[in-house]
Every structure is written in C-alpha cells, then in structure tokens.
Image (tube, rainbow, N blue to C red; front, side, top):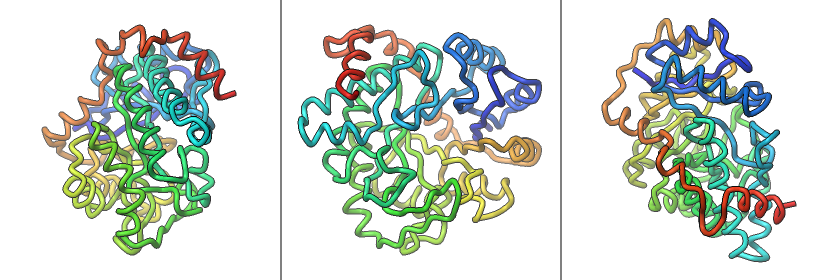
Length: 338
C-alpha cells in the first residue's frame, strides 16, 4: 500500500498532516526549508512523525549549494560544480572533498533520523540548463562518475543510500520541468553513450536509489521518463540491470501535469511505468484526492526495495572516516571550498 511520499505543512504537525500520515498509502515524508527553523525543532518534528508511523521513510533534498534545505547549524556544503572545478586542478583533492561531503550529509541528517537525501545529481552540465547548472559535478562524463562515486561512498559509510538523479539525464535542455514541458530531442544512442553511462557506472558500484526526470525524450518515447515504461522498465531495469528503488520526481510539477490534469491518473502512470514510490509535494488537495481514491497493490519486491532505503543505524554510528572525525571533515570541506 505504501507508494506515496508526501510533505507536511510547517515546523510541527497539524491535524491534517497527522490524518494524512496515518493513511496506509503514505510510505514516506519529504522535508523542505519551510519545515526547518533549527536543529532542535527539526528533531522534534521528525520524532513526532515517527511516533505516528515508525515505518515511514524520511527524506530531503540536501545536495549542497543552492539545493540544501537545512542551513543554520548544518555544514554549508559546496555546489557540486565547484568540486568539479577543483577536480580540474587537483583530482585527488576533489575526490576527497566529494567523499567527505557524502559522509557529512549522511552524518548530519542521520543524527536527526532522516533516512536519505535525494543526491547525487548525475546530470551532465551541458551549459544549457539553469535548473541543473552547477548542481552538476562537471561537463564531462569521467569526472562526474569519479566524483559522484566518491560522494556515494561517503553516504554509504554514514549509513545512507544515495538517490541518483535525474535519469536518463536532465542537463541538456534549457526548460525547467518545475515550470514547463521539457523536450530533449536527442536520439537514444547519443544519450546511451553519454548521460546514461554515468547512471550505469553508479549502478555497478551499488547505487540503490534513482529518480527519473520529467523530461520527454521525444526521439524515444512520448512520455516523460518518470512515467515511461520504456525508460524505467526496458532501459533502467532490463538494460542497465538496476535492482534498487525508483522514486518519481514531484507529480505536482508542470512537466508532469501536462500528461494529465488528473493527479490520480498521473500517479498511476508513474506506478505502472515502474516507480516504487511517487512524490506529491506542495499540493495537499491532490494528496487528499489520492488518499480518498487511489487503489494500488504494492508488490513484495517493491516493499523490499523501499525498505533498503532506510538509514543503517549501525553504520551511521561510525565516528571517523578515513582518519577524519566529523568536525575535522566539516572544517576541511568548508575551508577548501570557500
């Protein structure tokens, strides 16, 4: 039953939040900046969610740079593009920064009971996309593979799985899928030999979460990738051999709405295409409609995939990583990326 990831309104739970959280279709909560005033408040909010449903996944977009939901009393992480620039000057140093950045993310979020962040960004910076831009590590494939693998390794050492995004690649087109339809006209072979190589490499080293984009790759399929069995079943599962959990991007984004104005239909399209969990954010009326009307039988395989995304609490207790304490790692990353 647990196939929806939803959000909550503010710093603490309102009666409507509690009602939604109790519904068996809800399997996860994604947190935003509006849910954070300080660490103590955030800890209380997460505990209050867990007191109602201890089985829920708690997640956040906490990549670093301009996409970091929690800032005060958290390490201010660099954008990934800056790490890419360091890579061009000092490859070893950049890999160390990416490695420690992943560990810091896992440690700081895990201490509060957050299961995972939607990171790393695996998109190529083609220089066209303002919504991706410096969220990407680099304009070339090999540095992205090396740096995202290092960040992923750091996450894992802190007990956290990564979620690579935005499959099969969002960096080529200018359009922002939050606001408008996005069409990438490239042929399949061009993508297979570039963007998809990054996802394939990360899958081979154990990446267990992937988020598809809402981009339409018009030479391949008429549907956005997150609502496309061609992309999620044929390419991601069958051709790339991905065994992990697939999380949709937000179904309230305009690039998804264009597929159908009916939220239930959009969500069913994503689930039928192969998503394990579907995000519906910033749209409480849509969430209520789904909780009242959606019928979906979650498979045992999907439940197992989702459960593997939980924070590994034993691994999360590790106090050191590659001769760095957490404080030392925080200082190192902050100092070298000023």
